[in-house]
Amino acid sequence: MNTKPKIALACTSFSGGGAERVMINLANKFIEWGFPVDYIVISDKGPYKELLDKRANINILTNKPNKKAKKLSVVLNYIKYLRKSDALSIMSTLKELNVLTVILAKLFFKGTIVIREADTLDRLFNEPTKKNKILLLFMNYSYKYANCIIANCKETKSDLLKNINNIATKTKIIYNPLDLKKIKADALAPVATTFDIVTAGRLTNKKNFKDFILAIEIVKNNYTNISAAILGEGDERKNLQNLINSKNLNSHIKLIGFNSNPYVYFQNAKVFVQTSLWEGFGYVLAEAMACGTSVVAYDSKGAMREILDDGKYGILSPVGNIVKLAENIEYQMNNPTSKELLEEAVQRFDIDHIAKQYLDTILDNKWLDNE
Image (cartoon, rainbow, N blue to C red; front, side, top):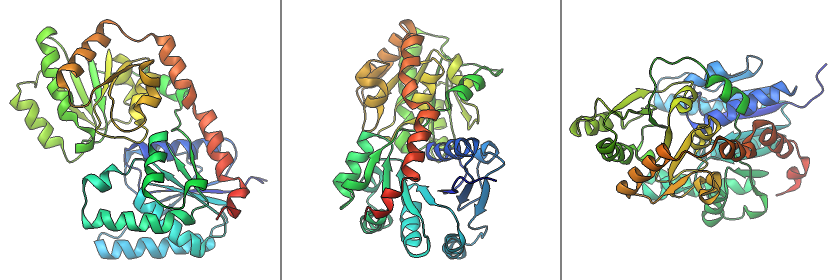
């Protein structure tokens, strides 16, 4: 008979983002260690569902197509779950769901409430819409009622403490977990096409893949047969393809969509590039390093300096300087970071180490008294 306490994990969906990957990895590791897991999602959509351990108890909050009916269904079904739940603790991730989780769990849940902040707050300030202003207000109201807040890097924590009141004593840093054994195994899978330079992430303005395209345009002047790929899907696909077309780079850069095994592309590339304008942790950067691939990353707001240890494990490139970005890519092609250094860099993020930190936090009853 299993005497270990149940843990509830809440995420918006199974879509292919970093926050979703973190929650899947943690759920699988907790289950491996013998902890029963309730996995709560608003929407039963996304490619990561197939990666979730089949022993997880999936709770889908809505299947309503109508927008208003969907919102009401989510709230009612979440309340229903929380009232009946026998989980010792619940942890959610992503801002909107965090707000909802704290408010409802404070009213209807008996266990510990933990929220995980996956990103800095730049989106809320860079896009000052009415919706984002309201979200910030609700974060300020609700976050202080969580028993613990986990930030995925120093920058995320600093941003939270700067903009959200009364949470300093309950906020801590835990990095994203990397399943290093699985990454290395998946990286050895066969692949039909390989690329010299790769990048990956949701195709959004935040990820700033246009700078990647412009840098490759410069690199091809010295490396006429260079090949590059952007892995991911998103709203910017059409604009990025139009830019590739306008620069006559179709034979050099491919948009290859989302792939559940990006590691095979990372492993076979000479350089991985990250051009995000801001990040929380920047999952794919560390994943590429785990594949033994040299990296170049914009020195933008986020965990890039932490992951690269101020440039020890890869090159930090000045944001927006396309010429310098191209130079740094070429440098890494010719002077790759040693495999030993890259191996050293990612050991900090090994899932056994990180999941233990999460588990200690989630199940630490002292947080119940930390109001």
